[in-house]
Every structure is written in structure tokens, then in C-alpha cells.
Length: 117
Image (cartoon, rainbow, N blue to C red):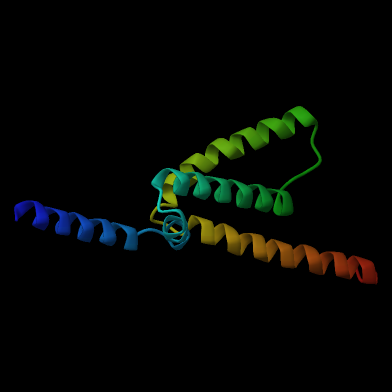
């Protein structure tokens, strides 16, 4: 009887913890139902979005070695962001930043093509 109550309580606690996850992590967890794969997917997503935001908004033409160093630090920094993204909407913020920068770049290219800039 006590083991059944303990099992019921642990399922309840696990469900409450999953509900506190960020939306992207919750989506990946329900998709895979494997915490290890979920964390790797979250890290890959954050890293890809961070690289996209960097390239769209901040990247300059640099020599190859300097670019490699920057991307290495960006990838390592995304590990820290992944820990924060468990409960905070880091991935969603990067998605919004990428969308804004994509819109900006498209409009800038359109204006340059039209000759108004």
C-alpha cells in the first residue's frame, strides 16, 4: 500500500516538474520522453539559434582562426544558456531575436535593391 502511494506521489511530482519546464524543453520532452536526448536537442537548438542571431546581427568579416575562436566560445556559452533554458524561455527569446533580425535583413536588402539606401 505504501509503495503504491509513493509511486503515485512520485508521478505527481514528476508531472509538476515537467509543467514548470520552458515550452521548448517541454515540447522536446514530450516528443522524445528521454531526458538525455531532450537536453541534447535543447542544446543543439540554442546553439543553432545563437549562431544564427550572431551571423545576422553581429558578425564581421574575420580571419578563419578568429572566427573559429568566436564560434568555440559561442558553443561553450550555449551550455550555460541550456542550463538556464530548463525553466526560462531562452530558446523562445532567441527565436524572437532571429525573427526580428531576419525581417530587418530582408527589408534592408529590399531597400538597397530599390536604391533608396
